[in-house]
Figure (cartoon, rainbow over the protein chains, first blue to last red):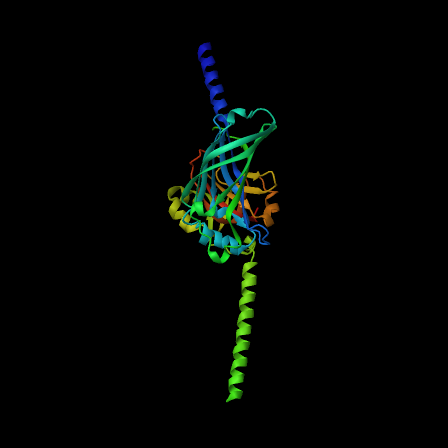
Length: 187
Length: 153
């Protein structure tokens, strides 16, 4: 009987450890900036409902963002973004699947700021491309937050900006990702 | 004859000027047009949270066609109130025992309306549907909304 209880305890501990490896958020922020340098028109938008999962054991990470969730200051920009450029009805989601290349150097149980190198595949507007960038993981009081920024060319994702606004929209967009994660509790 | 010609040219120029000024005014106001305040928008659909979740779980592509970009008034149980590090609230509606939820990001102008909500209460939210996340990541399926405001607490 003691052996059974001991084995059961081991199974519970292992299961709990695995659950604690995964962290997630559904309120991650992705913002982008396609402002032309020195232009007075800021072309910026933010999405406050990004879903992200990070497996701290393997460094694998994935995020999904609903493209219609990007909020602009000006309604016209938002309409052009959704209807003409990114065609969000046809391509509703953007998705990143990849991993932290130097995950073994991050001590998720110790407070600190850790430089990360992230590599993966970004799918947007129906096109998938390799993406590689540096980022940061911050561990503070058991909480994990991630941040990274990278640039992408509209042309690489078959997003065509009409020549009439070509001088107002940058050819390359700077994308920032910020996520405060919480431990995924298994039911 | 010359008199009539001169008059016609004058009126044509005046008409062009008025048209040009009108076009410039339209362009300026259209360019600077802000996203409408959700509180002033009439809902395209009024629905219970459980019904909406059921529709998406049964046929997400059909439901997306029906609800995406539409203003929806949703009544349901407040499952949780998520507050991010910058103080923005997300109102989560649905059965507290179920994995699936309706997630409504508050409009920045109406964010404070969510501050006093308490879990378990029945509320009505008005928001714009932005998409559906199926349960691909093992986190439960979610119907997503943004620009939310609280209609009834």
